[in-house]
Amino acid sequence: MINKRSFVRGASASVHNKARPVAKFSRPSSSHSTKPSFSSSSVRPVRKFGSGKPTLSSGRGRFSNNSRSRKNGGGKKRFGGERIDFSRFIKKGQYIEEKPYVSKHTFVDFPFNDQVQKNIARKGFTNPRPIQDQAIPSVIKGFDVFGMANTGTGKTAAFLLPLIEKVFKTKGQNKRETVLIMAPTRELALQIDSDFRELAFGLGIFSVSCVGGLPIMKQIGEIKRGVSFVVGTPGRLRDLIERKVLDLSTCHSVVLDEADRMLDMGFRDDMVFILAKAPKENRQTLFFSATLSPEVKKLTTEFLKDPVFISVISGETAKNIDQDVVRTKSKEEKLEKLHEILKTDGSNKVLIFREMKHSVDTLTKELSHLGFKVGCIHGDKRSRERIRTLELFKKDQISILIATDVAARGLDIPDVTHVINYDIPQTYDTYVHRIGRTGRSGKKGIALTFV
Image 1 (cartoon, rainbow, N blue to C red):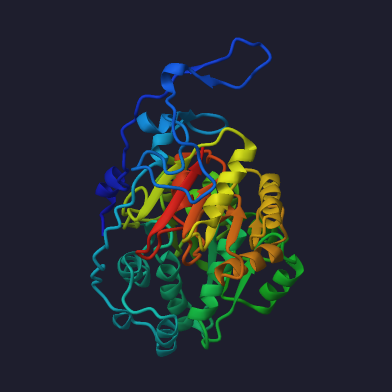
Image 2: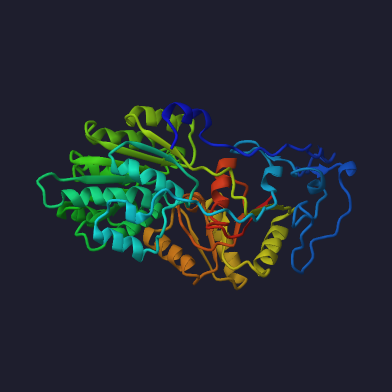
């Protein structure tokens, strides 16, 4: 546990890769050509990418057919996002088996009722993970908490378990307790609601997931029937408040999960509006985030009272992920190389990221025509279709999922072997969260970025 004063100075350690010199470009003299070409001094002949399996090239860019990878990260990207040195996409996984975290508590040590303990055992939980071990005692005591942890580290159970116990203790009393949980995406909100139903099984406590794309009248009906947990995205939650359906006057527990992502997605005004509707007095507010940006810090100052700061950040990117780049010169070559990667042994469960929704659809059709079992999700897909596709991917009924950044944060998808950035992400922070979908739970992972 970190005290408030010392936390802000060292909340998140970042890993810095030394920038390498960038290859010089020269443009052809023809005024009709717009494609840059490499000067002859910067190009050496190398073996072309063959039709067989991709080969490892001693950390110089696994699928390289261009000599830039021998000297540097292959240039920088600056269009619509921050300037990123491509060398930051190349890092050999260390495959160091992490020592098991020695928790101070077991789940039995926590004052949960017998049914909750049975639900914990049914989920297969044994010893708490770091964020759970450190956050649960503070949440139980009623403190505001700001928790920083890498994605996929068990944050959901860290706030759900103590809040379920808190609500269960007030069940049957005149005092009505409502818990509000905000999440940046429909998928994450629905996943939290699913986790709640498993952990609160048999307690007679009910929830509603309020997300766009699903029938609002059904959500209104569930709220009117009475629920203790409201889980949703900021836009839909605000809509329900403005319709005077969702009353937060009895909401004394608020959780913002992936708070930094909600700010990135432009939900700040909605978040502030919703928080203002919950009582300021006797309210417990929990923020969970993977980063401490100035905007997030400002929100914590505004809405958290003397919070307990907890950080279990383990580094910028997972140590057991092999990160490399794939160099291409044309759309045809790009698809050809992707095809070869997907055919290699070990490419069992692949998550591919694209920047644009229409690009997701296009690549899905192309890979489907090539015979791959592929699905896709993005913001224009109906919620039910997105939920169904995610379930198919989780259950290995499709082996490839193509998505925009709706799948980059918070989602717990087991056993992803490869993350492929078919388009370069807008920011390095987005890259970090994208590749965090693989190499989870101590397993090896591969992250490839097309440049």
